[in-house]
Length: 187
Image (cartoon, rainbow, N blue to C red):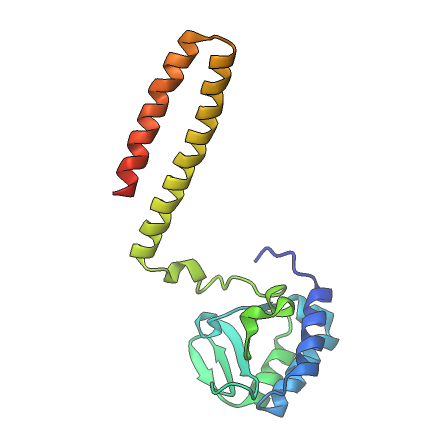
């Protein structure tokens, strides 16, 4: 996973999080503290969502939500024992660890968003419905046509000012084609 998220950013988030939130399990705090104090481990830790899809991940939640308190995922198996997870990450310190921390208003928190990465095992855009993708493509096409129309109108104005009749005629034909496409995309 190629990332530019530094250990400093991760430490900043962990410090921010542990000062403002209480975890449901004290062992979760031990794990976060361990990661904070071991740069090699923290470097191999990735903050993601849908951690259950990863080969080795931990899910933990703060007390301010009603989700499961702790889960450790390894190669398709789920474990609830936080101490087992703690020992596993200490023993396998050279392996990548995916970490999901669930807390209220996470998506409105700059500290969290600064360390959040796309889970390579459950990419966010793989979950977007086909219909939504088609609507986005149509909207982008429409906006692109509007921009092209605006730029073309500026070129037409320039050709009129400079008295370039041939250029004006050519640009006007292109403008009609763009306006036809705009009208079709509105329907």
